[in-house]
Amino acid sequence: MDKNASPKADKAPQTSPEAPFTTFIRLDGRSSVPSQFRTSGSFTITRLQSPAGLPGRITKLSPVPALLVSISLKSLPSSSYRVWAADKLIATSIVHPFRSNVIDFDSQPSCWAGSAFDYVHYSVPRKGLDDIAEDLGFGRVSDYRLAVLEDDLVVAQITKSILPFLGRSNGFSVLALDQFSLVLGAHLLQRYGVLQKTAPRLKGGLAPWQKRRASELLHESMHGRIRLSEIARECGLSISHFARSFKTSFGISTHQWLIQHRIDHAKKLLSQTTRSLTDIAIQSGFNDQAAFTRTFHQLVGVSPGRWRRHYVSKET
Image (cartoon, rainbow, N blue to C red; front, side, top):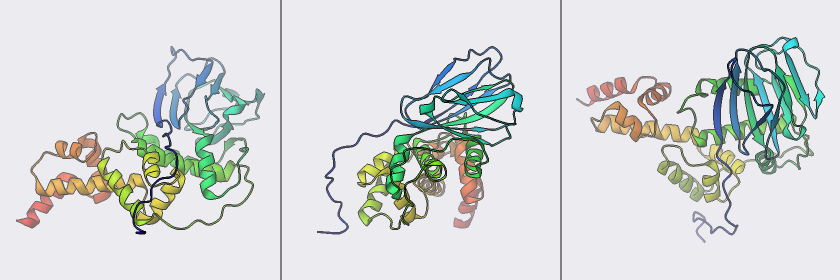
C-alpha cells in the first residue's frame, strides 16, 4: 500500500461540536439583569462590563459540564465583590486587575459586584478538556481545582491578546476560536486539573497525505469558516491531536497558516492585477480593507499600497 495514500476511514461519522462565539455585553444603570445567566453548550468568550455594578447576585448555569473561567480587567474593592460556589461564600480580598477565577459549573457559581466592573468570562466545555487530556496521555480528569483571584499569568496574557478583538463584527473566525480554546484548555488541564498521571512527551507531525488534505481544506476555506474539527476528521485525528501535529509539521497553527495564505494570495493580486485594495481584501478572505491593511502591515512590515508601489517600481 502507498504510504502516502489516504487510508479509508473505519470510524462512524462524527458530528462537529457547536461553533464557538464571542459576545460583548455593556450594562448601564437601566439594564435589566437576570438572576440567572445561562451560557450555550459551546466554548464562548463573554465580556461583561458595567459602570454601576449589579443590583443582586447572579448565578451562572451551563447546559453541559463545563468550567467557568472569569478574569477581571479592573480592580474592585473587597467590599464590592462576592463569589459563591455550591452556595458557599468564598473568602475574597480586593480584586486586582487580571486575577482569575476557575470554577466548575456543577457548583452553580454565582457572584455580585457592587461597583463598576469589567470582566471576561470563558465557558469551557469539559468534553473538549477530556479530549485534550486523552490526546496528551493523561488519565481521566475527574475534578478541577477551585481557584478564586488566582494570579495566573497565562490566562492574563492570552486575555490581553484578545481584548482588542472583542466586540468587533470581524473579530474572530471560528477557526481562530477553535485554536484559542485548545490553548486555553491545555493550560487549564495542566494547572487546575486533578491529574492521575503525567503525560508522556509526544512527538511527530502529520503524515504526507494528512498535510496535503489539511492544506487543501484550508486553501478552499480562505474566509476561515471551516472548523478545526472538520479538518481533524478528514485527517482521521482528534481535534487536539491534529492541532498539535499540524504545528509540528508546519511550524505554525492552522489559523496562522490561513492568515499567511491570505497575505500570499493578496500579494499575488497586488502584483498581477490593478484591482482596488478593497476588492483584494475581500478576494483574500478579509472582511474589509481596514482588517486587511492591519494584518498585512503586521506580517509584511508595510501597508499593501506601499508594497504594491515598491513592487511595481522594481518591475519597471
